[in-house]
Image (cartoon, rainbow, N blue to C red):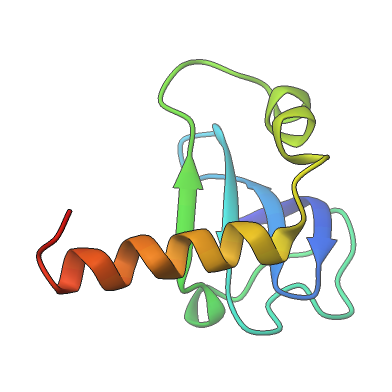
Length: 87
């Protein structure tokens, strides 16, 4: 997966395997990376893809005002609640 845009050291927008844009998260996966670099698959902990046909610009516009930490915490909370069976 090639990086389209680095959002922070732990989050990047990439072109997924099927060519659709995706957000990947993982500890340090985008550290020192830039557009066009390849993401190490072993560092990817979570992948988020839009279901409908959208462009990378649509995805980054959607997330430009949301701090990456909020996305990470939200995902963590959802994951924890699913493990406890409450969602």
